[in-house]
Image (cartoon, rainbow over all chains, first blue to last red; front, side):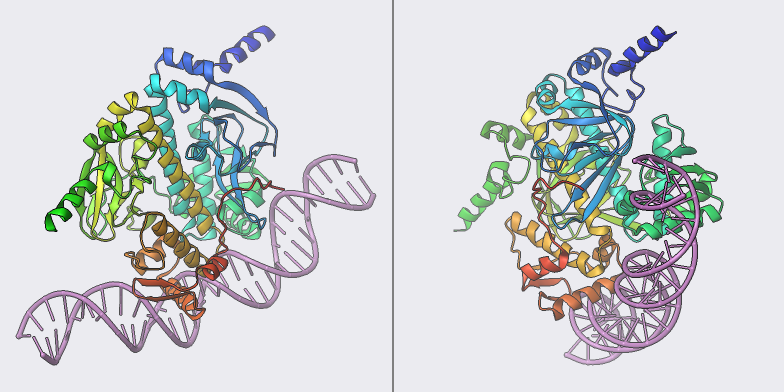
Length: 251
Length: 251
DNA sequence: CGGCGGCTTGATCCCTTTCAACTGTTGTGG
DNA sequence: CCACAACAGTTGAAAGGGATCAAGCCGCCG
């Protein structure tokens, strides 16, 4: 029994056995290519809560994929003001903003005990020439990041506090579902402080928004434990639109 | 005299003669590679004000680089609400968000009479395998886009109207300077309506912020004509920090 | 138990939104 | 060429929502 678990664990250590393989770098690669990728990836680095994976200004060594847990990336200004610009869940890539000049533009901290895979940049460059499907996949995932940046723009521009929180929760739940995690009842790892920073609101305002959503019966929440009771009305409040574009024309 | 001008014009049509070559795709490429790139690029497509280059939902044919003029990219929801998520100046690439699934996620309209170069996606893929420096350069520029998404996040989260406008003007001027355009006195092509949408503010609020900045002597402005009188105090108001990261640690 | 940190709740103030009127420019047609 | 409409932008006054300051709650850990 125990040995079987260990074996399963061994299998999960390689990309082809990883739960995230459909979402992560292996997606779209041939089995042979995945094996090759496997050789490059430094697997299962364990990071504890609040531990830094890297800091803004560091020379970039690798790009990273979340295996288990979650991370925040943020900027910190000289005057001490900080801004969280991204939350990363399993299957998602980060550190991509460093590809422009080999130097990290954000700092990344674990929100909970987490595992990451790292793909060293040196290897990535060497291999991408003879394995175009890999660099294509990196490109695809970077492009997806661009779109989530646009999501953020939409979230922050001209939306009320309640809408921001509701929209965040919808998207967070969707992303959890997408990577095979429980999506209607879970621990949000992210603190009120971080959440309010990310959403461009005050801590107290976020707290009040949670209260309103509780009173409306959409959710129950205490501390970071969240339960989504009525997703569809939560989406209504959020002014949620899945942005499967439907060829709508401006003007 | 006239023939000389025509010749110069001819030279500028090719990447190696283009004013934007230091900023755009040719940057970091060998002369031979630039010539090869030149074969692929569909040059000098002319787009008039408000004309669409593509629309959200369109199958992506190419990625684009601004040669002259400027563009806005925006999302449009079914309920008619739209959100501008990017402004593109000469030397900048756009359409990169379509690389994830070959389908444009935003619509792009010209803000003024403009020229674009288009690099067909089919060609890009075919060539990037044998010309890794090109795909690397595309990657670099996409990564830069990611960072400007983070800039936007910082701009929108928890900043007053005046700060947002001042910061936008600083960045806009910097970007103009960066691509060789006049940076202290120029026509902003972008309307108050579009600007307020982009900044997540009401039109009237943006107007009042301009007035305050005028009264402070930082700028003069009428309609879209702008003159920056005192850039350093404009930066102060914006809470501007050049984000050359200086190894500052969080906490 | 006591103290601390993370979160919640309350009261007040201020900035942005909203609604409305006005100015000035551009473009069209008689 | 002027009258007029249409439009972009400005300004004013009132209303509302989030920020701010302050106090209280509660789970956790020494």
